Length: 322
Ligand SMILES: Cc1cc2nc3c(=O)[nH]c(=O)nc-3n(C[C@H](O)[C@H](O)[C@H](O)COP(=O)(O)O)c2cc1C
Image (cartoon, rainbow, N blue to C red; front, top):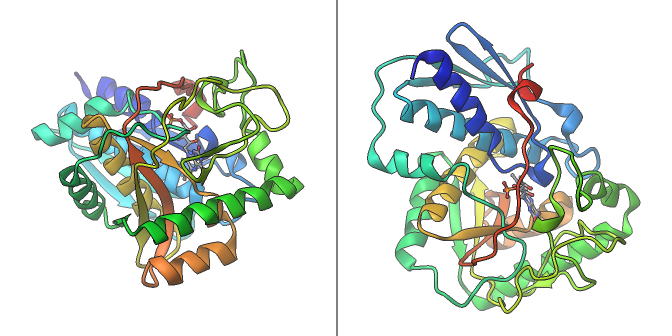
């Protein structure tokens, strides 16, 4: 693979990152040997994410894919995060060098980039091995964030209750609800972004294993009826936290998120997200004080095993090249 082919493949890999509501809020530019990653703020959630926290987490996940794909194509990736204080939307530059050799573990992660999918229901009763959970903690730590499993049943119930409370509050708030509705894809939609109707549950009850699902179907008869059928386990609950809060921390959280998701996927373990409480300042603050020892919660995730397979869409490369 020559440099141009490797860059192209890496940009395509970047696009397969998870992003809040599949908003894909990133834009790339290539100049010589340098790739720049910018935040596409027009794709942000105006009301649910006014500071761009989830937007930058999403871009951090894309950055991890970009680096990993370059490395596996034999190219070194020298990353500078937030390189220019005068240009806050410039999230990272990646200088593509030569002569890199990816180890086997990195290749394993690379192989999952296009395969990994978000789950939106309960999991089967099949256990997630403790050794794997330890591995997820290590993967996140490599990227400068902390992944903490929440094991105590009372704590799991408390986080689940926060997701239900936040979800109920959000569907009553017209502006917050609009931020979700904007990204819900109707069945048969030709859009290249947003959450596909076969990837979110239908039906009036959207609480799986005690955790509230986002209401993408919102007042429509949309969504997958079979999703999570017979799967009632919450799986293993985990929080991703960072010691500080701000753009650098959010990008690190995104890289840590994606690294742990790919590691999980490589072991047949899927992830479900419930970030609604983190969109409400007082609930996020409560979680920070109660469960995060003062660190800042960035993601709420359940890891588990499912055989469901929802669809996925992404924008094409010309659309993300600025
Ligand atoms: C910061 C962030 C927050 C997310 N929050 C949620 C959530 O609350 N509920 C949910 O179902 N999915 C959530 N997701 C998952 C996205 O909806 C998902 O990544 C996107 O639709 C693309 O689908 P895929 O992950 O299957 O490729 C979140 C993803 C990110 C990066």
